[in-house]
Image (cartoon, rainbow, N blue to C red; front, side, top):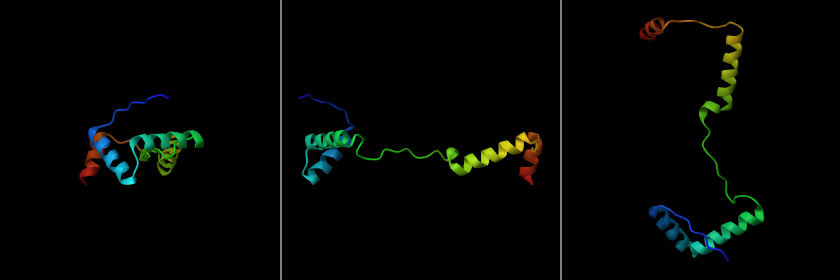
Length: 90
């Protein structure tokens, strides 16, 4: 049998301890259950995701492609910074 040691923030450690206590589990049973489930299912037994960067959303990518096609076909407007600032002031 092997031993695993992990480090947790104090607040996370206490919150996990309270949660497991309410469930009638120990950290030992929690980690053993997690490990056995991961091994049996050959995957992490919960979904890990990161928020999608809105820049890479499908609608924005489509808009960027449309803009690139317009630029490639010569449909562009050129303005100086002064002209843009004047337009903003209107």
